[in-house]
Image 1 (cartoon, rainbow, N blue to C red):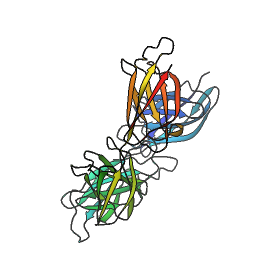
Image 2 (image 1 turned 90 degrees about the horizontal axis):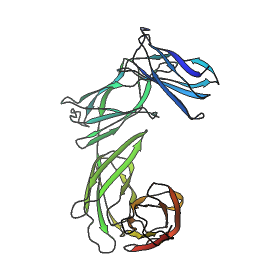
Image 3 (image 1 turned 180 degrees about the horizontal axis):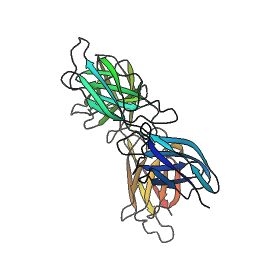
Image 4 (image 1 turned 90 degrees about the vertical axis):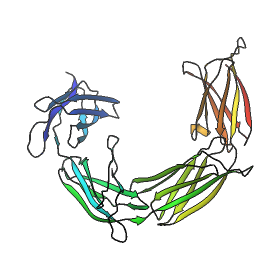
Length: 358
């Protein structure tokens, strides 16, 4: 007899069967997965499954998902797992400025605390009166069906707010009341070439920070003078700022932001280096065409650059940071690993040439 999981999916309050819902079973220790869907009676059957411990998740239309964890499946026999689902929840409130006026046009985002891979955030924008309502929020149903914790953040129009955790319950509206927004901070950043002193234009710059599990971020592109403005950032927070301008080293720094203030900084970046070379077949000295070359830092960590050999066996990997050493891995045209070159030194503003015989 094959091993598997079966059960019935019902709405928690009415006890009505839920049909057409997708049901998934996933086991990490058994490296086994399965899926099914409920019939008109709300019943499902997932088989065959390898023996192991499974998480079972049901995903109905227009209702919150439910899950059961630690379901033990043996070598044979069907394990019964019944699941209850509930209506979706909602989150509402009124965004106000510090002067007490309605804050219109504010983006409000709710993200599930410790969200599983299948979770997702929801958002809404405030109207002229500052009112916002985020509907369709997952209120996960477990043994207690007590709801799900969400963190939330709001920003826009020169204001920002990082919210506290709030419990969203099935078929209820979690009212945040009046949300008084803080003046947003911003980062004014200029990128310059460390050798020539020239501005670095057209560089994509990202600032990211976090508070109560919510990612707060902004991005922008440097202008002809190397300046970029990153706005609507939460105050009293330190942001990581990253960029990888063409022809220059990676920018990876941290800048503190204060409410209503502008943090100004100038960063000089060294020119990056390149690795070029040729891959040849040792037997006949012919070029190895279509081979893949991958550059990584020590033990495969850090930035990765990939390229492919041309009709003459040559390749070029650009924009590599000169700090540390690099490892080149070579794969044939079918993607099978061949060999590697270790401890390749890259110099700022220069190309390092290598030749590999395979």
